[in-house]
Image 1 (cartoon, rainbow, N blue to C red):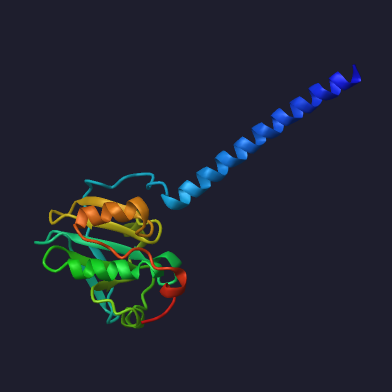
Image 2 (cartoon, rainbow, N blue to C red; image 1 turned 30 degrees about the vertical axis):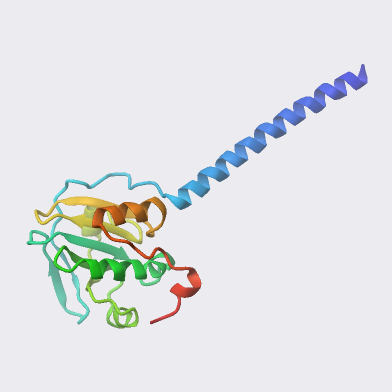
Length: 193
């Protein structure tokens, strides 16, 4: 009788442990998937009009970016201290080379001291820092790296958040009809050019 009770108790404990193990694995899988493909912003801005941007250019003077132009504008929001942004610069250089006559590429930095940053990375597209918090909220610029495409009519037509890898990389390549080199390993990305 005692052995039967012990067997039943052991069975229940094993079922509980099995359930806990499955739950932990499900949570871990969710965390891994979130790292690979982060959730989209809580509110899509696709189709909304983008207001002109005013910030600080490479020369330290105020500069404005208007969107109702002959070419669509690609905005790349980054932080000079963001590790994923750093690993993404080869992709941005490839995108800048592909922009010739097809779209205008503008980097929007979280910082205003950009001249040495741009020269160290050999960036040959417009950079703007010091964007107001209101404009960041309006455009949905919440994390780095983030990229928006604004049509020549001034409407946001596409947005991607995160480094250019996996499905996001393929989506960007399909949209721009180019091949990107992909995110550079951390050791290569930290080497200054």
